[in-house]
Amino acid sequence: MNQFQYVRPAEVPAAAKAFTKGPNTHFLAGGTNLIDLMKMGVVVPERLVDINHLPLKKIEKTPGGISIGALATNTEVSIHPLIKESFPLLSLAINAGASPQLRNMATVGGNLMQRTRCPYFFDTTMPCNKRVPGSGCGALEGINRMHAIFGASDKCIAVNPSDMNVALTALDATVHVTGLKGKRAIKFADFHRLPGEHPELDNTLQKGELITSVDIPVSPYNKNVHYLKVRDRTSYAFALVSAGVALNIENNTIQGARLAMGGVAHKPWRLTETEAFLKGKPVSLDVFKQASQIAMQGARAYEYNKFKLKLAPNTILQALTTAAGLKA
Amino acid sequence: MSGKKSNNPSDSEEFLNGTRRDFLKKSSLLTAVALTPGRVVKAAEEQWDEKIAGVFEKVSLHLEVNGVKHTVAVEPRVTLLDLLREQLHLTGTKKGCDRGQCGACTVHVNGVRVNSCLSLAVTNEGKKITTIEGLANGDELHPMQEAFIEHDGFQCGYCTSGQIMSAVACIHEGHAGSEAEIREHMSGNICRCGAYPNIVNAIQAVKNGGQS
Image 1 (cartoon, rainbow over the protein chains, first blue to last red):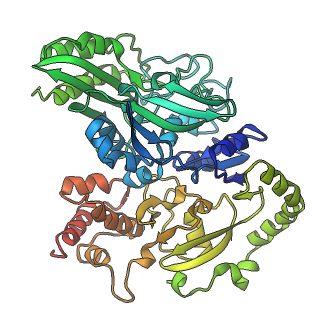
Image 2: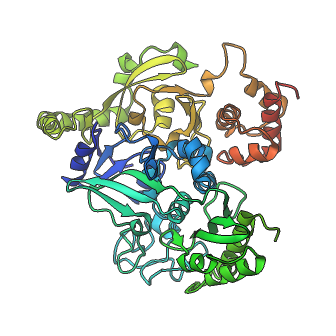
Image 3: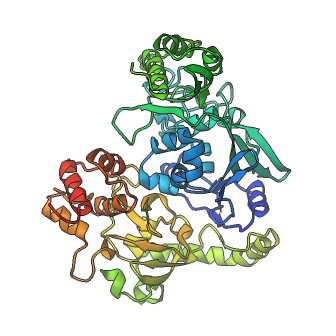
């Protein structure tokens, strides 16, 4: 690992300041992704700003919902009574990711900042527009089995690897950030971006902006939920496809639906058209089958990930039927 | 066991005048020392004053390992795993993948299991670390260590320290209720020999009060 300057600020404003001035700087939280990337030479910071001492760990009720401090660990969130009661989809999604050891270290803010697991991004001998803009995309005509089927560009077909993000986008979370220019709130759906011409940008954060909390509004989506993750081994692997589903069912009618997919796009993939289709429909296998097809509109596969065109709708269908308590 | 009997490593001759690698670090340190005053002043102005280390500088770190307090000097890029093995000579914790994928380096930090290969040592200021060397009570093995022997929970043994540290945490967390739950919550520890069924048996035996 290359050497770097190490700074440990005690206050949020000082952290932002340490970031914006001087050399190539990164915030360090749980480190489960960044330290790995530094060992591989994929990310080579000249300065690390250790934010672990900042007071950003609280999980608490707010007038409109629940606020999760950016430094709360994945484990702390997934087992928290408020989260389990109000947002069980989030607990399920977090527990589907990584291993217990990693979840004990990884933070909520860090999970949002997690880089793609595309092997061409990790291999510094390969071209990758995300790692070295303009160098090309090794995955486009390479081994692209794990890659995107939605929203990709000819510059990048990598996917966002997070499970937690799938739940947070479905639950309409808001990301609160602080930078030198002050505070602002970013809708979760606007936080991560599609690759377009600039795959080196994973998200819409400005330089030096620090995630301080993720807020989730109260909603009726805490009963009929399911997170289904399909992967190459039973546990501890990144998703080929995952589906997060939350339904608000009254008298066998779907009052509202929240759906998102993971492992299929450069950002957690919210399925708003499918949600609109489901609203007002009766709970039935036939409706869910139609929904799973609507979810696939605009999908495009590459040489080695064509299986996802079949796997993705099947995953949604099964997640919907399980969430609704139907026997498929 | 060296951690328990050793004095503060930073005070020892061995630590100060050890290897060629240390010599090289100290050569670099001379450059850093020359830079220090201005940088520290700047740090204070910027309110970074709690802790700052230059590129070649070592940071003073206090932590407790297996009940023994240590004050050590580490470069910011040193992982907790390397600190334990290379500076504190607690080599029971193994380096497998060094990337958080295998679990061989699992230790407990403030009672919680983590991958020590992905944790920078400097981020563990004031924390309590338990390694495999800290589980036994003198010559009396921890029940999980006994159970791994009893149930043949290993072949080559390389992953075993991590497996045992994880297994102890798995029960503490309340995740040892069934074989499926144990397998899910032990999934961060890979065993290339494939001793998984016996590892599960060992954990179940401890969970059930040591009955095998």
